[in-house]
Length: 98
Image (cartoon, rainbow, N blue to C red; front, side, top):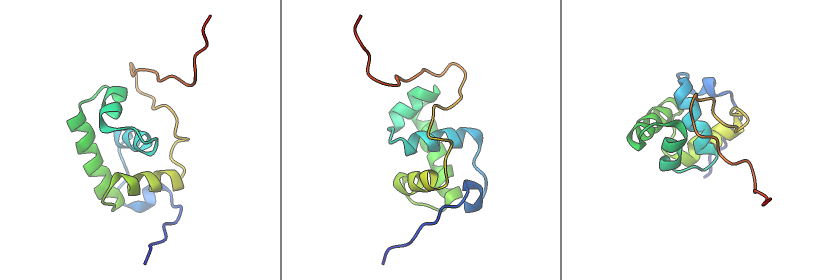
């Protein structure tokens, strides 16, 4: 039997996420790997894994897919670039040759 997940604000799932946990969750919802998340945020993969463990516990989920679904259904921050000073900017689309 499948469980129905409803669109609730993230704060309604338990303890609120920290700013960094929110950034990680947004990137998880964009299907980035731990390595890409680490590079994007300028942190280690181990730190990403630690944040994911905290996110899972706070949201009451067991995997990144469940966390991503909650983020998407709750209207995570427009699944946009995280606001991290000095973080690399990802390409927004195809490049054209000049």
